[in-house]
Image (tube, rainbow, N blue to C red):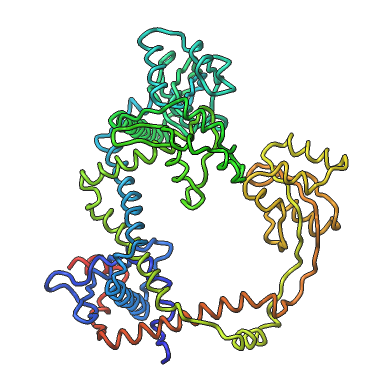
Length: 566
């Protein structure tokens, strides 16, 4: 059976479409029938506009419209088959649906919480300009828990205790704490955005509410401000209005989350947190050996209690195991990472329940997005089941290679060992040690972190276009010989790089062995598409598909919105 042209590549666009439900109200223009189901121009229009403007196929000609309509028909056939196979009850699909409900439910809840009744006046914008465009000197106290931060704020605001004294005693910010929390004149280029935003909005000597960030919880006080000139206010007014709105939204959401933590009666055991935090790996350390240091007794200890239960050390480690896909725990000042991770789980559960109570998951845009993502997951599974037996014969790979081998070329390649650091002084230190006779490869293991360390610093073989830093590219390909080392170069991200060239190979035509896997995968994908198209063609014949060209011809780029609503 040969695939018809209208089926080729249909699956590439299908996943982007949300079907609202075939069949409109009586009298609506029906453009196609799939068995007993009807697709109206309204359905057509909704499906087309649900695709992002950058990926939306054009509807300039009748052929364009027919091609898109056939994609809708194919998706209807595939979804019918997916439901017939009970894929909507597949455990993986059910789990994904729960994640989508959390994702879209929390997005909508956030907007409802922060935007309801939010107003920005002209006087507020002008006041915000004066504060935000001034130079602000501030200080803060950073602690690991919201409870501790609330207590310190109370001691400052209600009991009149000295801010700087409390900062020296309690702040876990190793830089500002000993200086009484003094941050100096702060700006967004050097300090966390939340500190800049909050400090800019405070009056002199005013103490902020407790503010959460990735570092922990802050109590902030503005102690000096240099006022800006008003010459640029009118030009800056719309920007300031947008910034002020976002700042108010952020404060509302932060206050809402603090209220939810209080309602959940979240309490941490500082001693257990300190004990486990000291055993966690530092950020960037990928050695899993630290888990062996966590005893059975420690795993049983309680890190946190809350209204509906507790979190033990063992539960935390199970939630952030390599199998969970969430990464691994990391050591942070005061155990802030541990507390933020637990709070996030508790708040997600609470906020999803709140979204359900408010009927947010039933809202059209939320329900549509969840349905679309679930359909994508079901179609992925169905596609895998349909094409699971597809194979590629060795003879096909060989004959394909013989046809195109003259065009299969690879450019010059290099293989090198890389040291990548954010600190220029540190990479210069490494370079000095290498020039002093130490091994580049051994120092790569000592200095690198993260993914580069996982590869032991080894990169390649890489073609010229795979090396984005031009200075590094020129040195490796044009100036150095194997065994030689590059200078320290600056990456676009602001970090610093240094490499030792290990191997340089001239470009050549790919051998059969080198091209084998790429050709095999291309043929496999082609065979899968062919089988899927044959399956769709058979289904169309079985179910019965009818297109009404006279109705489809009514649709034009300028009329689709109006006809879709008829």
